[in-house]
Amino acid sequence: MNLSDFVFFALVAVLSLFAGLVTQRGSLCAVAAIEEVIQKKRWTRFNSFLHCSGWSMLLLGAFQYLGYSHPLLEAGGLNVIPGHDWILPIFGGALFGVGATINGSCAFGTVARLGSGDLSFALTLAAIAAGYGTLEFTLDTQPIASLSSNQQDNAAATWLLRAGLALMALLNLRELIHLRAWRAHVWSHGVWHPALAVWALMLCNISLLMLAGQWPGITTPISGYGAISWLVLVLLIAGAVLGGVTAERFSIVPIAVRPALRRVVGGYMMGVAVAIVPGGNTRLILVDLPSLHWHGAQAYAAMVIAIAVSLIFAGWFRKIQSEEK
Image (cartoon, rainbow, N blue to C red):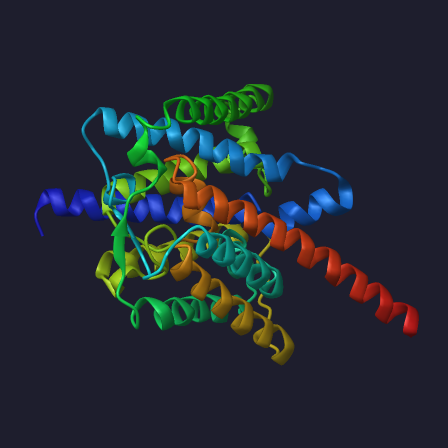
């Protein structure tokens, strides 16, 4: 191994570890964020994901300006299953949302919960890979263009969306200044403010995408099962565990039957949805929304609505059960 290879793997390792730690410390989870909106009318965690998309747009734009890009960001770089049209991203997004609710966490939350010692969430990762493989490796995918490839025809809408995402980044910057994020003690807390967590997560994930090319969470659950994908996945989980241990939030929770069934069923649904959309909430937030991929906006909206509806119905069901007892 020469020096350049060593530096490359060292950067990938450090970014992967830190991304896992950030996910755990920030308690980032779409399901938890939407549940917080429904139950407590608090939008801080939910809005932080949109702030993340705003920063991602700016960082991806900076990379492209410097001459660095990625196939996911180019016209025709999006591979989808045959017959892909407007209905599939909506169906896939809704399926992902229902699956995440059954699982108890989205993709972010699964890593965070595993990092806290809940071993059943390891089954979620395996089920996501199995669900994704069911469609991806049995159906031939084909490239399509996206909204970002038709910017001349949608100039007004494109600039309006970009302005909105830039505003999200500015709102996050205001929160970072208010929190005095440049002070070390702000980052020493066991639980990080969502504004801190999403900014750090965006920086790690986009840097990993541009550096490693393909890695779990954005391209595929386990991208081609290559060495880099496995390295990132293992270190991502290790970083989450490190975050849990250092924050004194790590406690081994053995795998029980009922949670295991929820993880397998929910994870499998999430994996199938990732192949249909294509992409899960990690990719939607970090790549598709910032890149103005129309399918990403459809899928993300459907996912949010599906999670909200599922949580409301689950609450009603629990209430009926308690009244019967």
